[in-house]
Length: 308
View: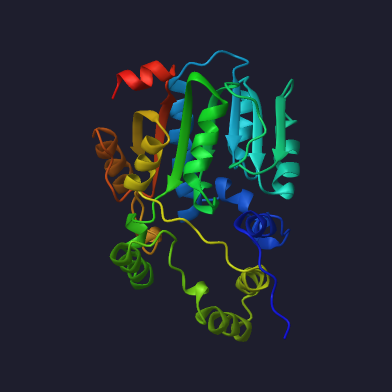
């Protein structure tokens, strides 16, 4: 009997993010299109760039971006005059992001295809490492954060941003609420998704009957390569990982407070009001759509020991 070949997490992720179908090629448009996903990504990116600007790094500072995707954030880093390196699992995104960044006159950018858990850069090389929304696809997030620390200069900064699986958008409809309860009650390491079950075939059959081309393409891709397991992420999980990787957490923030189900009728003023209230807190509201952390590599081993 022929069996579907099995792949490790890195190989599955590479296949998922190299498929040049309309699902993947449309990803870059989220940053310029109003909608729940676009607003969520933009809110998160805005906080990341705000944290970066607060560091007042000099022109030419060396920055590494992990999981740069279509290069939206990378482009803005290059515009700020930094020397930017990048690692992403997708060859397609590497080509797309490189072309975009090269539009900036005098751009200093070197984007590569690689594994964020096994960086090829030398120790103590980067002034800052940035990663937005990619840790859920990494087999070992802790190893990735430790690798980022290795390549950071002593005192260098890490800015990491992640989607929150326990956000308001996970509470506002029965399907997401059910997933939330399953994750919380079973303490699953990976996000529960119905596409892990027989329901994948049922959903695919329904989409074919309804001729929903976009969803047919997306679900056929899952069936062909297998579903990449997504790590559950929350404020507590992310802050714990940073502490385990021996970073000093400098500050953090929630990013975006919109409902997904009620997006069309969710007032902008409400989102902005909750954002301001959250920003005023020492610890952001736990139902933010995403979280952003600014953390610092310790200056030396002796300084790490002295804080214990």
